[in-house]
Image (tube, rainbow, N blue to C red):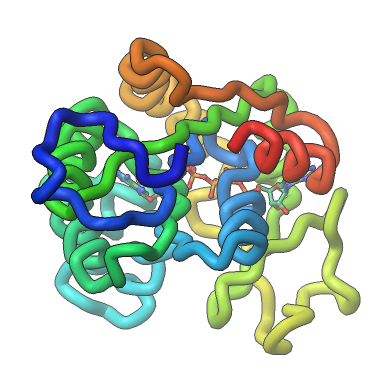
Length: 231
Ligand code: AP5
């Protein structure tokens, strides 16, 4: 599949490109966990819009300040801000660099903008991996999540606890419970996912051979094997 044109761009408009894979699924299903593993396994770039936004918040950039109110409420940050951010990241990458998108696209306009941006770079969406899990599993995972504000590592008090409670294994920073991981905001994030992001499953389902659905309730290794097999 790698390098096979999907859109009708003329051959001269396309350059050799790496694979572009989207991880799609609800909050807490494991997109970030699997995105890191997949990027490591394939030497791809991991573009996680939530992580980029959180980094902007930490650094106090205008984008981070603008995004904060949406993130804290569990709402989506406006499409134009997200699309500009992703296009900038894509434009700075070598043409043959594979990418795993995590948390993007999240709306149909974002998906349409991604198609256009990739096409302009001689790329295309090669695979959309949908991770699925019941809400009670998602709520428990999010309740148990502990995140490193410095290096971005993610742990879970139930399934993947840090060696020392409250301390990041990688950089020794104090772990935090994400501000948007409180129960009320989590419920809104789940509702927003169903209303605004789930329609993307239909959007990509219509493209032959692009979508793979993987159960997201098993162990991390089992899910990773499922994703690698689906590619
Ligand atoms: P974002 O950071 O993307 O959050 P999300 O999509 O809600 O996803 P999560 O990070 O909550 O979960 P995940 O699926 O990555 O799961 P994880 O691997 O951490 O977005 C945050 C906010 O930013 C949005 O609400 C919005 O405001 C804004 N935003 C971001 N992108 C945007 C966009 N494109 N457009 C508009 N706004 C945007 O796993 C969860 C926990 O479970 C962890 O503790 C992990 O250790 C554990 N775990 C993982 N896998 C397993 C397993 N198999 N078994 C047991 N535990 C597991």
